[in-house]
Image 1 (tube, rainbow, N blue to C red):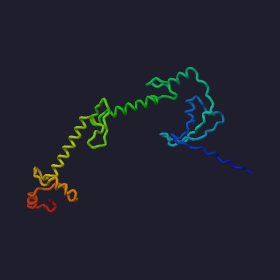
Image 2 (cartoon, one colour):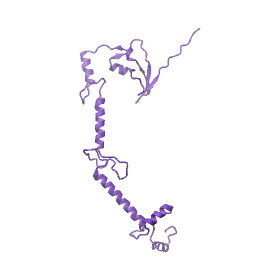
Image 3 (tube, helix red, strand yellow):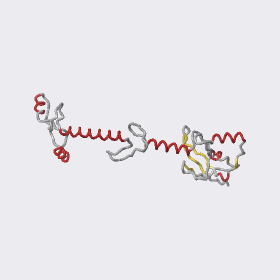
Image 4 (tube, rainbow, N blue to C red):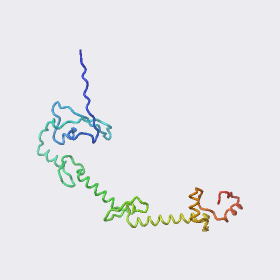
Length: 216
């Protein structure tokens, strides 16, 4: 009688979920460790690699790993050079490609600080960060000249809209056809359809053959 052995199912973790004491093969090599003879992985890391797709990588417990053979003097110098940050000249515990993680965090903070001090319109850099307000008239990452320009432009546009609502839309006609009170009352009643034509225009259009029934 033969008995079937049920395969052991290893837990699968994603990036950021791996326990702190587990290491991949690459991380073991960085600590000059390797899986001991007969040592089996205790979990799997599921990770996406560009050009390769999703894959599962074994995770080992470094407490059971074996030490790799000592490096020669030449290999030690080469490894130290690969782990030296070219920016801060500090030797890290991992291979540094462009800069170490500490320098990368500082560079990112400098870029964010520079962005906060740069006007979003004219791109001029100030000595202090520009305030950001959710209010329409508030400053939204702008310098004072650009903010004043935006506020004045908005006021001029609002004044043009007010004049357009009050006067006849005919060409070169500036006759006032409605007051602010009448416009507000029609808006509250839901009957406001735009600026009114002056009373002299419908008879003129009728003589030209246009239908003027919808013109107030």
